Length: 255
Length: 298
Image (tube, rainbow over all chains, first blue to last red):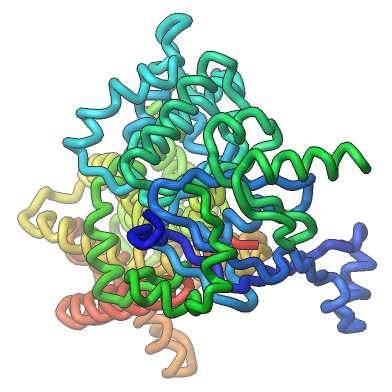
């Protein structure tokens, strides 16, 4: 099997540096003016070296869990793979266009769930015919209609869990070459979590690659057979989930 | 199965070579202009649906809903007529000043609201941009469509005002359609410029209302174009008369009113309108395309 594995994401010694503007923003008009007059503008730009030389290869049909403590660079790495953050150094190659699915992926809150489904599907590049065909399934999968007809209500009336479920269902409706999931599974209830974990397995069976960032080690154990442990922007371990998690749990427990 | 990639890369295959062999492409590369145009065309259904959704969501919290598409321009016209037509009485050179004024207000308002919406079309949709990959030009383009959708009922209101002030309905009114098409193309270009500038310079949004007001005061909306002729500097007259807003307003007055004195001959105005639309439309698109991969970062 090893010789015919097809890589979908190749990360080659990637560095990501954030530039944060206004990190030390002055709070009054006078100090703003002073800053402009004295030309100390650069002082307010701070650099954060979030990813420091990460390399790995992901293959078709793999589900990879990304673990690490808060601020270790997991979400940053996903956003860089999705092409949403520039890399400072190193090469990042992908098959097709990776899709990032995060909990804060807002659609339009004033519109009904149904119309959000249509809009989301079109934004992912589906044709109107495909959208018509799938939208009932998406609503069904999200389970937002389990307590009455919520799909025709504006999304601002949804609970945060319902909104997250609908967003996950929309994103999971399309076949992705590479799907990046950032904590999304953690938001649903237990029933939805089981269903979405099944969906992630299906997506992998359709020869996609799935990356999953989560703080619940159980959902990583259930869905991913390989894990990468990031700490302060550096890979600490990369291998079978069981081994990596054991090491990670020992690290977190020993702190 | 989990044979780790670390083992493979240390086996000596350079990762760059591996990527090339399997046809992977670099993340975050900008598409070529023709590819970008094709991509945008493939997303036309998204653009249309998004524009439609934007119109209904912006009015969904009001009680009168879409009736505001008619009431807003009507109130606008009433306010300007009250101040400039009735109280200040700037009507000297024109027989039918109410119609003259309203056409200016409505046509300028179309460009003005498109630019204002264009500025926040990227910064106001960061959630969507960070979540999904689609050609970003879809957003400023759909903003233009939203404003065009708002312009259509406004034009109906304008038509009624103009007829009520005693202008006849002539075949010339058919020219409204090509004027609106050219102006929409011009507006789309401006919205694309504004979208990229607005995403780079957040403070632009604060300055824009003033810049737009200066533009309106220089566009013969509230007074007649004959004021330009009275200026001492000839170059200033030429500059003011080739102002795109003046061009579109004058064309609209020409098509909807009888016997208005124009800034330049009608044929000249049509040429200027076409030139402005193509130049601003194309350069706006190219300018926006150059920043395609910058949007949503930071």
